[in-house]
Length: 142
Ligand code: HEM
Image 1 (tube, rainbow, N blue to C red):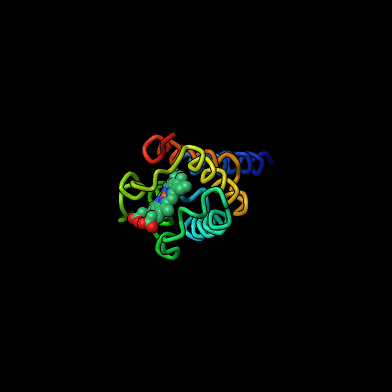
Image 2 (image 1 turned 90 degrees about the horizontal axis):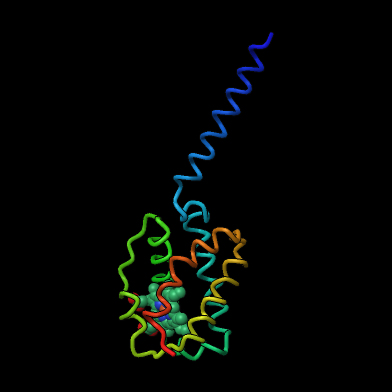
């Protein structure tokens, strides 16, 4: 009589164990929703950045399609996805642009808006920002 109940409880315990193991082990890339979500975030990011008068001028001579591809690859790789970023390292890519701290911060604000628009949960937004925020001192100046 009690056996089905024990079986049910055992199954629930096993399933929730698996679920928590999975969330501990799955990469940030998977938690974000994989390639299609990263493509979507990047599209939103460039839409917002190109319309942001605080920083759009910095992108005037940039090939937008190529930039989209390199940012997707970089975010994919840095979040543990199956991509290899083959672009310039971040210091090289941004050298000579004399990006101000305020411009870096504007870009990060736009990144947050892009993740919001792609429905990325706040907790995951913070994990993505934690990867890129340390670049502030490498690529921007007062
Ligand atoms: C969160 C930090 C950032 C990340 C992850 C990032 C990522 C990238 C990547 C992957 C590239 C392409 C590199 C290549 O061509 O191989 C790039 C280029 C570029 N980035 Fe960033 N970037 C960041 C911050 C910024 C900021 C703050 C600005 C300006 C406000 C900026 C402006 C540019 C521009 C204009 C290019 C194109 C350079 C060119 O045309 O050759 N980036 N960035």
